[in-house]
Image 1: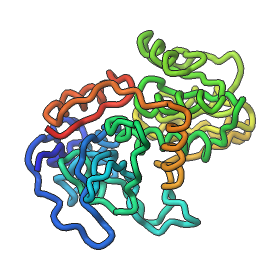
Image 2: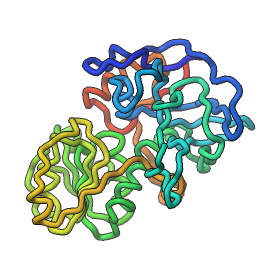
Image 3: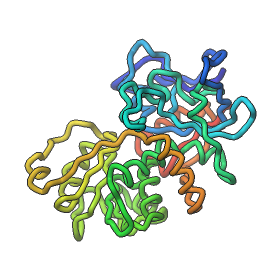
Length: 323
């Protein structure tokens, strides 16, 4: 079958690991699993980490990319995939399961004509939602829901700062926060990206590192090293910084003195629970908000799409479809 995959890890040049070509079909599924016929698969920064070999064992390569997908189950019903795989879910929370993994980490990913997945991880696509949009929900939008409302405790009227306001995750954060009644601030590196963040719902957009007029209740930071100090300066005393990614590096100076003196809560956020995934789909269906797509392209154009993702030239989500 046709697929987009990493041949072997390449930490210094991730795009050199990328291949578009034939991979084995998934074969008969084991008990409790099913074969999903993929109609659309969204790209995430996680796919660049796979190409680099980050958080994936070398023995797993070649590895098909992709955490997100929407398509058709064995009965031909349109479904969307919850991309966190089974582990022992402590207190019913899959995000802290002892043996958790995401698609494309241990099991082959979703950027293929077909993929074998746990049957319980397939949810119906909401009425009227295109499969290309549904394919964006798990990796970006459900994660944004988990960051804002579960880990960040955001409530209507709170002020939230979203670091890096143009990518797929940031787009979900801004749109969900605005729809939930939050005051939304964002940062973006270029004037074009700042305009985009305003278009999708930010009340105010600043250049990276710019001082805020007043501190916020919550900062959501998926950028990492480049924005960490600014995130700590921007949150109010007793506020929260949620870390949902490290696209510019995961080892900034900790600034522990500020964290303890200002009583700042730092919370990690990894993906979303199955219940949060379902809640995100329901929220989107009831409110009418939808993912903003940068573009939808066939597998053959995956190298260009991933190069744009790596270079930060993306507004919203990139979605691949089988050739």
